[in-house]
Structures are given as structure tokens and as C-alpha cells.
Image 1 (cartoon, rainbow, N blue to C red):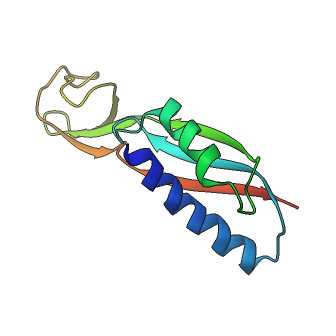
Image 2 (image 1 turned 135 degrees about the horizontal axis):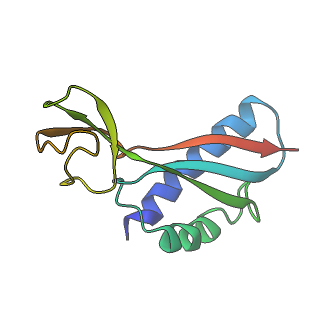
Length: 113
């Protein structure tokens, strides 16, 4: 389950930012997850609760923000949203698409006290 290691990375970010801003407690963590990131959200939620024990974010809410898949269509030269990597261009129907977004995952922000 790679979600556990993802949460360990999130914990490092949280601990670093809590130290930097002298925050004693993190109450909410917002994470942006691209459609093609391969993250299982229920597994991420479970791993988050486990990995955050003993950290400033123990008991914090995890909010997952979905980011769309994006691709550049070489037929119409537009950047478009796609639901699946193999989808045709929703604008022109072309099939020459290069994914340019949707595989990212990042901590967007934290609520601290």
C-alpha cells in the first residue's frame, strides 16, 4: 500500500511547516490529488489517521481535492480536460493526446493553531 508512504511524506511536510510557523497543532490538511495519481482515497484516509499519530496533525481532518486529468491535443492544439488517459479530445475528437496534468499530489494548505 503506497498510500502509507505518501502519508509519511505528508507528515514530513506537516512537521516542517509546524516547526517553521511555531504551530503546536494542525487541525486540517488539504491535499490536491490528480485524477491519474493512482491514489486510493479510502486507503489514504486510513493511512493518514495511522501515520499522523503522535504528530502535530494527530486527529486532523484530511480534505482531498480532486484535480482533473489534462492533456494537450496535437490535432487541435488545445489543452483539454480528460477523464481517462486514452480518451479522445473532447473538443475535436482527435486521438493524439499527451497528458500534461492530473498525476500530481501535493499538500495545498494546513489549518493550524
